Length: 125
Image (cartoon, rainbow, N blue to C red; front, side, top):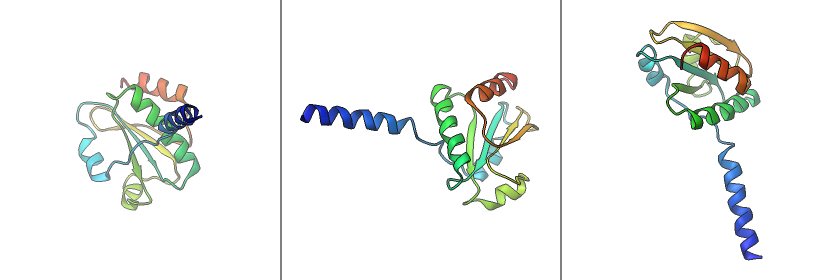
């Protein structure tokens, strides 16, 4: 019984690890990082937004698989000025900047893993 309980606990922890969200980045750091020779994917959302949480979990899995991708999340509940400066009207919003810092893609809503993979391929992540 003890062994069963330990096994169940380990399986639960493993399942919870896959349910993590992408960690927040500070907008000031993001501003300094865009246009530094690599494409940049920016997820703009909030932890209180269900669709944003879905995107955050999906992007966490992508980053786990591809840590070399430049993917960041800004929480606009904590950094409202970021939403204003980025002209974000609804969340979640995804913005891709090319290696020179030019915005090349913007989307509002949830993207599937397949859609994200196509974007990463299209924009040479």
